[in-house]
Image 1 (cartoon, rainbow, N blue to C red):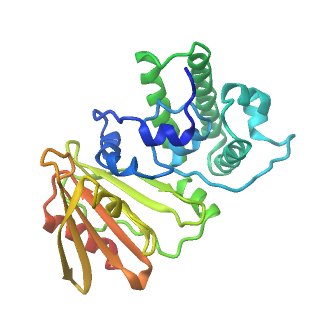
Image 2: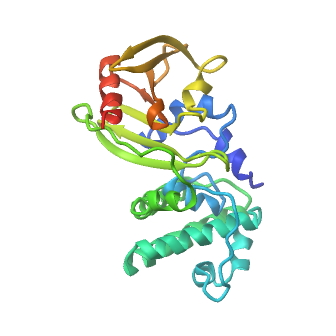
Length: 299
């Protein structure tokens, strides 16, 4: 199996719809393929060591980080950096350094038992991918299931320090905000912090589900390009309305294809606080979407 590079994996792979968190990604897949550089992808598809960071916390960074070889957690977990590079020969030194930095932060924020378990998950993941690459094939059904399971277990740990990780590497011009109003029966099922370009601020994504339907929010700096902008024009959505409410401007979009999973999208801009929030939902009315967004901005 010829290894794709990280960008190709994240831009081109089709996301299965049977998992709720994956359905969120498939709902914006067309827009992402038009230029997003770093996005979360199915847990089993990436053969990149950098995906351990992405899958766990949704965070990847540029820049350099050189750990003392004697203290390197990569050395402790894999025996040597060379052993890790043999499993992931296409990764750059920068990506390996990012991974080492991630491990250091994990050790600082997890208990000893948690970190040991997290390390074992990473080792198992690497062993599975090494075998798959050596045999030049795709994961079989059992391997795919286990890699998905490992990804879920990893995330249960990295969720404990995801925000701290992104805050160490980037400064926010805005305060991260979550909705105080959540429609009945919906619960948060995930959050993601990612940096699309080195010179930009992080993008904050929150995912909610009632077990059947989803809604998803994205908070970005007011001057950054958001996902809604990519979905308009030649994208899969069209603008249907712009209006003002509570002194704020709201933009509403709808899918060009009536069979689309995400039936509506809404954006609110808050210039005085340097951010805007985009929301897409599978089954919420415009009124409920506005209520969610207002509960995020009226603090």
